[in-house]
Image 1 (tube, rainbow, N blue to C red):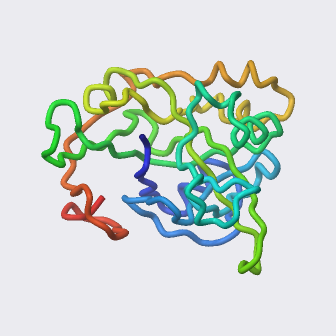
Image 2: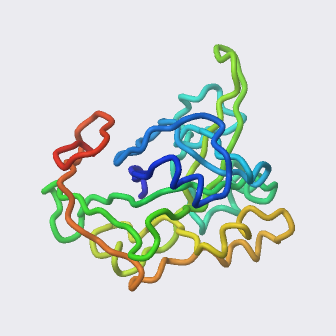
Amino acid sequence: MCARYILEAAEKDILMAYAAELTEPFTPTINARITESMPVITAEEPGKIQMMHFQLVAHFAESPKSVKATFNTRDDKIMDSKLWKPLFVNHKRVLVPATGFYELDKVTAPGENQVYKFGLVDRPIFSYAGLWSKWVGPGYELPYYSFSIITTESNETVGAVHDKKRMPVILNKEDEALWLSKDVSPAELMQLFQPYPDELMFAERSGVRANTPGRVIGGDENSL
């Protein structure tokens, strides 16, 4: 599943890609990890790029550290989930800006910790489809905003190394506004949950190491 992704883009490039304003600064990273604060664009405020924590926390959870938090949302279960369905149908949808993502090769080299980097050949900055939630509770002065990335069946490129045959939902540029629209039915939106075309993606072996803690920015000898 998509537990590590990349947003290695300058602030000016993010602003240009989304024609939106940043509500607070962010640091480009080659290793966006679970619980980190990352940029998203919501259906409610499409003109703003906001920061939320990567890993969705249900509004009914006891705390943001709930074991029920999910960093991915499965497209084939989204309408059956008491957490995901209300967010999906009530317009709690986000664009998650990215420049790539990682997967550990568990198919051709299981146990060797070989990581592959995936990206798009013609779009340096693209968007995942995501959901977001607001949690309020004791011990936190401010609301805790969080998001998940929706996953779908993988294409051949990602499936070659991903043992679960899943990949993040990558939106076509022309579908980004549709994903944020409040005038589109859930059934229509679910048509966007498609594997991204193989011919528009690249995959390459990465020097990033797997299963080593720590957030990293830039360089080849880093931890995933």
